[in-house]
Image (cartoon, rainbow, N blue to C red; front, side):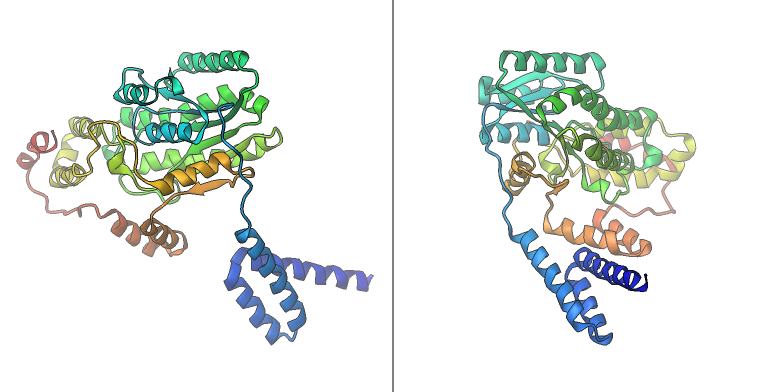
Length: 384
């Protein structure tokens, strides 16, 4: 009995060390080597480190098997009126997929531009993901399409549609908060739920666009970040639920392209709505700060016309979500600055983390000795 217990204990120690080495990578292996030399278990430790090193080399050096895009694979992308959706629809079509792009309005500039550029090569449908009837019409359209093309498959649903309001949480009206929750979160839930039976039938993949705000929520984007973090958490549970049906659940986190997107296109109207709903106390308290804050944001302009984002690395990452035969759970595209900041956001003590986030955002400072109420009256002129 004691021999069996000793064998089990040794096996557990080896498995635990393997887990430590794999989880911590090079740093973990260095710690194990030091421990092995100190405890005179050099041979066992070298074996563990050798197996771990070989596993890491195999994992990171092997090329993933790729699928081949073709017209019989159908990809649906929501929110194609502008920005990311407008860009991803075009790129997926160029890859060779049959693309069904959804638009909040078929009269939008983005819809008309894609029709001008691609004609019928990109199929366009109207879809409001907050409207159950609109969602049902989209489902019926797709069911009809597959009944006419039985050899086609539903390859991917890309949940991209979303809205963002920039402003401190206290400033945001109930309508603005509700809009972000209904579009970003509840709308995505409703749409996905309606398409689940088709995803199961075709063993497709669900790609949900999240945000770096889901990894570290940022001041001024607390509501938006909360909805994106909720989507990431939802994907974690949904991934396990749908795996047994052959459906792949993927989170796609794109990088910084705010100035090439129209996600801030209604920011001036949102600022005016926040200002108009301030109480007298809020007018007094925030006056100069609110004005300086939004003057600063006014420099983050949206393009006057829908335009395709110019970032090849973004498209390469998106292609991987569609074409990796065994896709990862999360795909991130980020500039080096984001990688550095988010590394420190994740591993720093909270006090340092909050300081780094403040430096990362570079928003105007709040000053308690704000000017009088009269100065605030200029906000309409400054932001319109």
